[in-house]
Length: 635
Image (cartoon, rainbow, N blue to C red):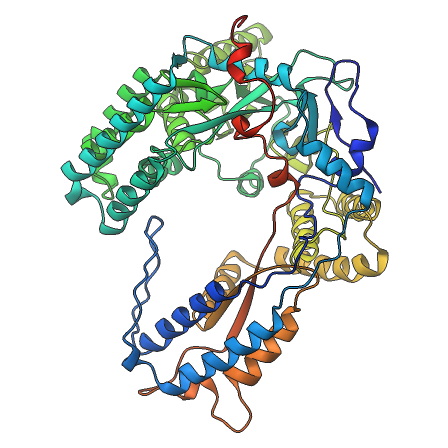
């Protein structure tokens, strides 16, 4: 099996045996020691969901759950549910309880691998961290990791060092500000969002800080991995006090960001944009990316520019989903109260924002887009293509002069315009006939732009091996998704075939068998070809039909264990005790006033903890070893 990881230690001193576990991939799930048997919460959820389906069976209203909401615990009155419904729920629940009895699980790790996993979790002098771009796990000295992280946090232009007491006091003040903002602007905040923000803010006040960590930019180190360490700072913000209001602000900002002419949703949208473009012989391609975009956006400047845009009458005319002062107030709170914890070190971000903090992507997108609105119109004759995916831009440049010196001067002037925004630096590639952008290589071929798949050279391709304790369907989803992606991105049929073969070979090298893969790949190829010949309208119609199907489904949430009951066994039990019991009416015919909208059960498998969870380094204060503050003296 292909087993590998990136050893970044000085002298490459990490024991090679560690690849027996790290090489399984971060997504690998060790089989839990015991099968799952705590079915009561799942059955209670199933009962409530069934009661709601029955109670609202005659209500034609199509209610879409709001993006921000506190989960309701309301249940229909007991006398509103037919007794036969409860009898069937009881019969199904008894069957499920008998199926999910606790038993010892068979480990999918060999004894020596279990010992290695224990060693990895107990490491003091080394740490296992994630690489940027998902290029595989990295091993590095703990002190080196801590000092690399502190390079970011000790930058006085971006962060203010705090004591724990100061950080705690600031967090309390932030909670007060958020609740005050909500009370002041209540009429501009929908009920679900208001409840969500208040409850989650109070809940998060117990552990109010975002957790700081870094990912290693392996692709910037070179093949030998001996280059200067480059890292991406990230904040795990989901439990911080600014996260709830940040999510609301992100929901408000997204429509503005997506409306900008340079906005690019994903690589598939780029394929559609490239298709009709005709290229003349003098045109060339280039890309550029922003250096540390999030952290380098000056908060004061961005607040001023974005606030002016939100207050503009034309913006208010085109967008009616927001109140300018309410949204600006939320952004002020989020962008000026990001308090971060790294072990026993506390900082406040005083400029820029952090990856992982909503609404950072929409905020950064809009800040750059408002700058682009100022200079792009004048350059349109030169730009048959200009699209940006956050901090990456792809350009098709059209020189308009026969004088090469003029063309060079204009290209230089354009780059200067792009770089004239306050705080950001954009690094350009040379004009060329081919560029790598996102996961695509775009090339000029005659008068057309051709695309193929781009893969980073440092990727380890640690696909999930077959003995991982994953829920069923993971391999199917991976094969279908990858084959479809190849067919959508690669234009040449031979290229597609070679890429699909490479994907197949990589799965074989990860332990999968031809007998398991060949039928899947055959179906995936049929699916991909059918997708490409289906119109957008047909795709939307099928998507709508599937959404309609979901309205007639019930869900049973269980934790997956390889030695647990199979979905087919649960489905059989559901059919015999609930949906179509022998000698009784089908479930959808036992309503008091009409048909009950239930035709199907979906078994939702929840996974157990994977290696990424078991080796998580985000909350670094839980590690054994010296405190982070001990590395501050020389920073």
